[in-house]
Length: 367
Image (cartoon, rainbow, N blue to C red; front, side):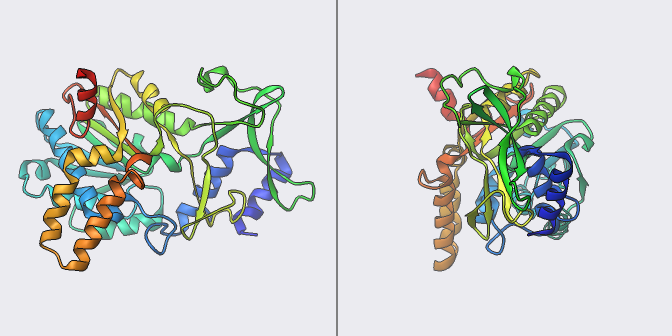
């Protein structure tokens, strides 16, 4: 049993079962034993690999996307370039390298990273050692003003609540202990959830069926929308998930690139859940901000020119590197890989219309 499992078992033993969101928050963010607090989870030696680690072109294209939005907004100076959950700093490093020739943009940039992991902050400091960077624990601490915000694989790690259909209706799913008190198990409480939590399209879900909601994600979506509607330029959300709210369980645990039991190895495994883009968009839209997408990641990156840029780099590389570049590009955009599972959504302020990468939406409207 891990140290965090002992801590959670004692808490549940004293106070009773806790919501899945509280269990997940402790598993990932406990100050001493939380997964993200004590180790670098990225790369071949970690538990997962994100888009920026797969191909440098991913970050380069996002950097150029930011420049395009900034120019549409009148090229304000200064402009805050913000990333939520920036991993090792790879995306931001690649993005800044891609825009070095746009001197007006690089001179205007004020870089802010929202990161809670001390381990990952050290990685980011190394990756961005040639840039002036300000770190924050939460987005609300980033000063207001014209800004571009990137959230790549950020929302999937936010704690979720699960609701289970029972004979008495929907009930909050919790984590409790088995009768012996030595293992975790899922249980439901007796209180019905607020009706505003559940979308209207869940009729007919059988007993035992699940629905997931992410209160933290909705709160951040509202904050993003408010910031964009105020003085912001654009926010870009990239993550794996579904375009419409629907029933089903997506909570998963990964350790050493292998799926494992959510209720075991707590603090040693990564916990994530698919992002409900419909819910995020609905919450952000309440602020009056423009919403684009979601569109498949493959469509977004293809429209930004990932294939042309990959071929350009491959033509100048040795055979092994060229193969890695092309394999990486396929992994990012292929329908059999990340291309369809991952989605992209943009929130824009008044100064930006029809951001790059969402041209397919315009085409659909004109058909």
